[in-house]
Amino acid sequence: MMRRKRSSGAALITALFLVAVLAAIGIAMSRLSNVENDTRTKAVLSSRVYYGAKAGLDWAIQQVISGATAGACPAGPPALGAGLSGVTLTVSNCVVTTHGAGNLVYYIQIKATTGTLGSPSYAERWMEATVSSIP
Image (cartoon, rainbow, N blue to C red; front, side, top):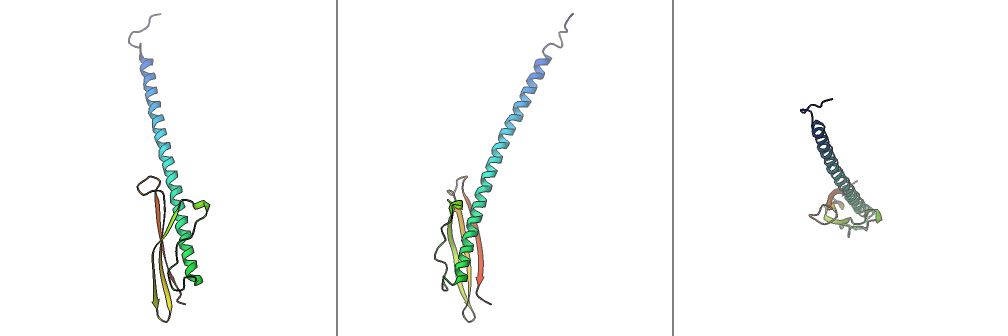
C-alpha cells in the first residue's frame, strides 16, 4: 500500500487545533469561576451591611418609640451580634422637630459599613426612617 503524500500531517493539525480549542475553553471556565466567586463574596458583604443597617435602624426606632431618648436622638448604635461581626454602624444624621403641642418627629439615618474604603472587601449601606409621635 502506498500512502499519499498530501494527507500526511493532517491528523497533527487537527490534534493541535483541538488542543488549542480545549485550552481556550479551560481558560474561559477558570475566569468565569473567578468572576462567580467575586460575585458571591460581594453578595455576602452586601447582605451583611443591609441587615446591619436594618438592625441599627430598628434599634433607633425602638429607642424613640419606647421614650428612652426623651425627645433627643438615640445615644449611639447598638453592638451587633456575632453574625454581623465586622459591620460598623453609625447614626449619621438625626433630627428631632416639634409639631404642634409636643408632637415629636424624628428623622434618623443609619450607615453600616464593613471592610476598608477603597478595598474590594468594602461595602456600605444607608437606611433612613421618619418616626412620629403624632396620633
